[in-house]
Picture 1 (cartoon, rainbow, N blue to C red):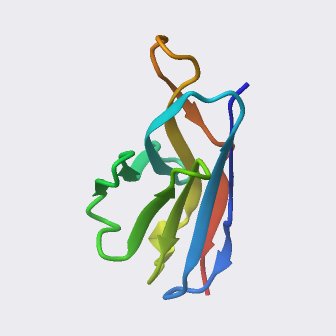
Picture 2 (picture 1 turned 30 degrees about the vertical axis):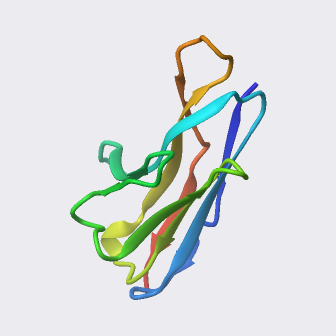
Picture 3 (picture 1 turned 60 degrees about the vertical axis):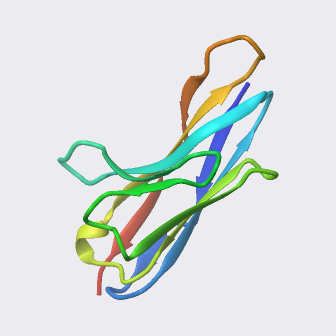
Length: 121
């Protein structure tokens, strides 16, 4: 059984920083793209950033230059460094990964349980 456990959220003042982590465990053959999404109250879930296994990244325009996504393939973990946080970054953040559990089987998408990030003075 594959599990994604995300952590690192909390309450931070505007302009502050947080680092989110997402550890993947279970029976895994290979992990392809990993990413972070967020959902604010009353809004749809939106993409924040993604990273390929080779390290190519993609960011939402609203976070570009402030957030940095990275991954450690040896640890099956993805990170999101968030700097210069704004109140509008307040949301539940979810990690996401495309994982192949068995050789020859098509990869599937998995989600973490979410971690709350609140930016407020």
